[in-house]
Length: 143
Ligand SMILES: Nc1ncnc2c1ncn2[C@@H]1O[C@H](COP(=O)(O)OP(=O)(O)OP(=O)(O)O)[C@@H](O)[C@H]1O
Ligand SMILES: [Mg+2]
Image (cartoon, rainbow, N blue to C red; front, top):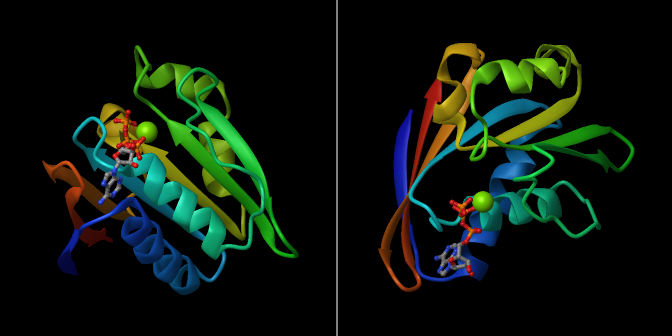
C-alpha cells in the first residue's frame, strides 16, 4: 500500500493522524521518518487524540520512550530515536518487550535510525517539508 497526501496545516496533519488512529484497532507499529520539523510529533499528537488519550504529547527526545494509557484498552508508546547513538540503547530500554505486548500502539520517530531492529510488519510514514505550512505525508505498509 502506497499513498501520499499534502497537509497544509498542523491541524490537518493531526486530523489525518486521528483518522489513522481509528483504523489501528488498538495495536500496530508505526515508523515515522523524514525531514527535521516535518511534522512527526504533530502527527503523534493527532494519533494520541484519536486513541482517546487526554495527556499532552511532547517529544521524548531526551527520555527516548514515553508511555501513555489508551483508555480501556492498552498502552501507547511514543519513541524518538533522534538522539540515539546506536540501536542497542533502545534495546536496553526494553524495545523488544514493548513490541511483544498485545493491544499496544507503538509510534517511533526517526525510525530509520533503528532500521535493523524494526519489526517486519509495520506502517512507514515519511514526512517531507514542502513549505512553511506544507508537508507531504507518504504512507507505505510493510509486511
Ligand atoms: N502541515 C503541517 N503539518 C505538521 N506540522 C506543521 C505543518 N505546518 C507547520 N507545521 C509546524 O511544523 C512544526 C513541526 O514540528 P514537529 O515537532 O511536529 O516535527 P518533527 O518531525 O517531530 O520534528 P523533529 O524532526 O524535530 O522530531 C511544528 O511547529 C508545526 O506546527
Ligand atoms: Mg519530533
